[in-house]
Image (cartoon, rainbow, N blue to C red; front, side, top):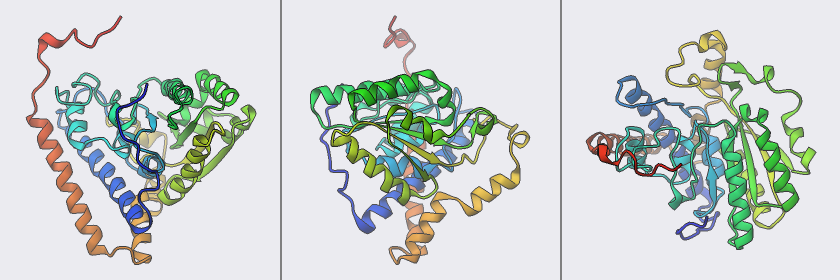
Length: 332
């Protein structure tokens, strides 16, 4: 399960460079997802699309604490995780549009993107399905002595899946280097998590002897600080941890979800967008600290937008897989 990449120090960026990089990466995810929304509504993208807009600080804050060769596993809402771990915008768009040059030759689509070169072991459409994969990767890293850490992203809906607790128990017994990151965006598809999740989410970790922490998922600096501590703890051989990240998805469960007005209010949405937007929070902080001015942030926005536009054109122009390859990469 090792990957042919050269590890880089998790603290290779510091100070202003680190904060501007995280701002840029969040902006890239936001503009990427806005373009995905456009492609999907124009019927240029097959399958389904689950947008990560509003949750950008989680993926960026956590992945910035990782080495290049560290592992991640993702979810059906995984575009942000992939991009935060270093995926190419061009190849991401190509995969979403079903093109042969995409990460999975156009056969995985939105919910099944993997990129071993960046340690991304794959998104997973099965709720909680990535938990076992991440734990297995951590076991591999421990046995091989590579010093790698695995991070498992999952939504609060996975708290009802038994596999999470089975692998958390195993990880605790064997002190595996894995961090379980629960992205609580408040809604399990169309239901508020309070109606489906009993008790205290953070209490689940200590039941297995797994240290647990919560953090504001709209503050990328806070996410990074806590994630860095937990990743370093895992890398030092002190075992797994659970990180609860409280965040919010701006759009519906998927692009075609037009019913969200029935399960949450427009006032709630607007409040998160205006008062708790992660990109705005970080941008305001950068300006207040004198690390950037509005003109510099606008310029950065233009640069990222150009990269996104190039990726779209690259994907649109790329060829589809040949029909004679339909039975390749199929295993029984």
